[in-house]
Image 1 (tube, one colour):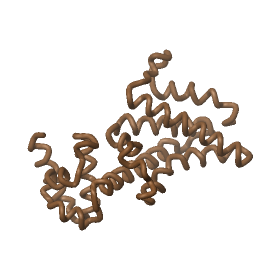
Image 2 (cartoon, rainbow, N blue to C red):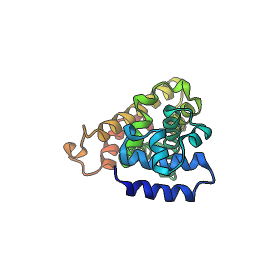
Image 3 (tube, helix red, strand yellow):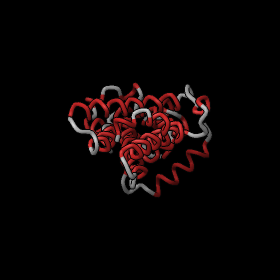
Length: 206
């Protein structure tokens, strides 16, 4: 690991030092992007920012898992915000679902290390982090809200939400892990691939 990235982080961190927790999460996101989950720890964060590990313990990160949970929570918040913004103004339910799914995929492909942390085994026990668990459900809630506007019957809406969510997360995982390429199916973009896939559920979205 070179010293230049750490020097850059230290400059940014000193500038935003007013809120230690917020600044620490910002720095941790940069480390995660650069070094992956394996390279993110309280020790690495302290070294990169020039702040003592004790200061981070005092800012509510009792251990590495709590740091990872805080970073993942920020990721889920950003994901939900992006999805909501991208779906704004959709003229109908099917278009809204297409935009939500496409936005989910775009976030994951543009933030691969963060997305992998958000759904990784490191934080599989969400019961330890109730705030994270609540935040993690926001993207699902956006899909549920979109479908509830057109689907009558509680059970039907619930099952359709699960189907769309499974499609959304499954496609995203395959794309992020490079196990699926839209070009294999004769489409030029992720947006076109999502449109064709969601169209198969069109009768249930009208």
